[in-house]
Amino acid sequence: MTLGLQPPHAQQHPVAPGYQRLLANPEPPPLALSTAALPQLDRRTIRRELVVVLLVFPAVATVTAIITLVAEITGSPPGISIFDGLDPTLAATLRVVYLATLAGPIALVWYLLGRSGLSFKSIGLDRTHIWRDLLAGVLLMIAVHFLSAWIGDLLRYANVPGVYGARLPIHTSKTAYIVTGVAEAVLYGVMEEVVVLGYLTNRLRGLRWSTPAIAIVSVILRGSYHAEYGIGVLEPLVFGALMTLFYLRTRRLLPVIIGHIGYDVWVTLQVASYL
Image (cartoon, rainbow, N blue to C red):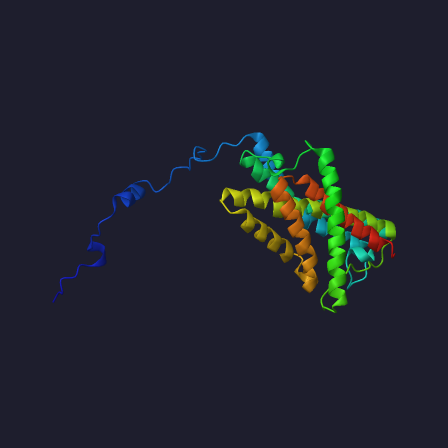
């Protein structure tokens, strides 16, 4: 008795044309590498890309690993900062090297502006008005200093909790503290203003954002990475508002950077006077 079923070897299944060719020639042809669909970049652009990407990673990780190794070799005590357990001169040197590796975002902005046919000059960072920019930067530094001091005193007199001043460093000399403080002032003064003010404003204008909206976003972002100050974040918020208004009115970034660096150096020297 049969149910009309064919044995497995007798069953016939249709094969798609593509699979027929594959069965006829089981060895696939070698892949043809074509660059037709890839953007044609010149050597200078490729070098810039490599530098920027390697600065973002792994430069920071590499330097951190080296600093950790140095701390272990020199017998840095556990439970404290890597730098605090080192000789002050060595610690200051390694801090400066480490800070240099954090400049990746600046290089990234430089590269992205270049890919758009722009440059740092497009965001107001050049030397065409160097003396005027220097004078404006000094005036901004003085204004920010007095505004920050006034806000800080106001909050302290009102007994508002969460206002933090600069902590006195430990296990370091006055010279080492000043050297690293100035290095930090230069790095963060340039990086914050280039990214959060110059680049952000340029791109948001490209999205047709209004000037008030750009100013609000820039100030909020500036406050976001100072959130550890608690209510004391009002100081960098006022700082950021002043810098943002100046930049949006003048389109000059160099005075803002000078003012920022000058203010941070001023604070560093004040703290160092207590060492």
